[in-house]
Length: 426
Ligand code: PMP
Image 1 (cartoon, protein in one colour):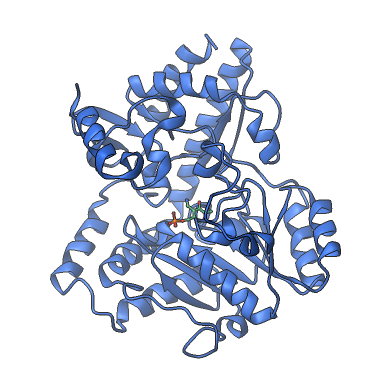
Image 2: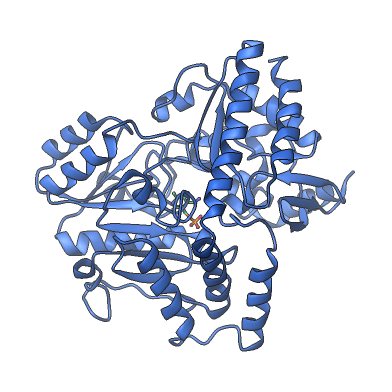
């Protein structure tokens, strides 16, 4: 038995499913999770000493790769000065300044500890600001695990095949309306059926939790207009896309100006951070300046700020990183497309910049229903083969492939060579 297997057996007696976040259990790919001991650059190493080329990057935050020296040093320096104060610090001001500068729609920001918290708080703010209760979300988009967002959610919820979670009060779920991504008509009809009651529309501008799905031409601007016309706030959840598709995120790429934006892990460089921000007039409704309450003992934690500030500063000062990430992403996507065509594989490839996805479905995927049509059995075979060759993709069809600045063209070519071996048989 490997050390990972031993640990997993023990973990299952101590933690539900042996993990602290469901997808980590490798349930849908039918294998046993690797317990990770350390990581560096594009590589992670399990406790048995196996090396893997990592395409998860802690689910997004490690855009510069694992244990980037500047980030690690900043963390160490900050830790020496104390781990937490529960009081205001200059580092929070620097972080807020960076976010507001790089994302123009964000005039003011509030720092929290996770993406879940950022979304939950942004929804409360939207409700407080508009005096309305209902929220429109899109099926297959994941916005963390707050009650209101566990309705037709993506990511692990989609992987497990459970449409919803137990324990979500009906009243809470009733206020969450679900639309179809890339389908403006579905939003129009929800607005019509709920006139004057919708506080906000929340979405991943580029969904990356039902695999990766791209917005159709006109969808995002159309949605922005619908929100304005109906007096609802537009909330862009950029937990994955923020600072990944560019320093201005997906909103800059697509020319969208949301009222509120949520950020997550990437602004913590690997430590727990989240944030929500947007128009000053809306943000000023948050306590203590306004009457929408939201607080956090560890919010703006100095060590997390040190990691995040260092990562964001490197990104800001080196715009070339994004060109390189785009080139690597293209190389992967084009390579996969070539393999698919050469061997007549029933699969399709999507993605943008450093986010990619191989769907085991020959058709273009535009929403969650189409994503669900992909053959998860074939994903399972692909995943396990790649893992056996030391290539670590997400243990689920419905997640993204993340490339970091530590990946090289040779890494991508090695990945494609392995992928061809398994795909030509599928
Ligand atoms: N929003 C999006 C778009 C996400 O992808 C995630 C998690 N990957 C979240 C919110 C929740 O973030 P967290 O897991 O940090 O709570």
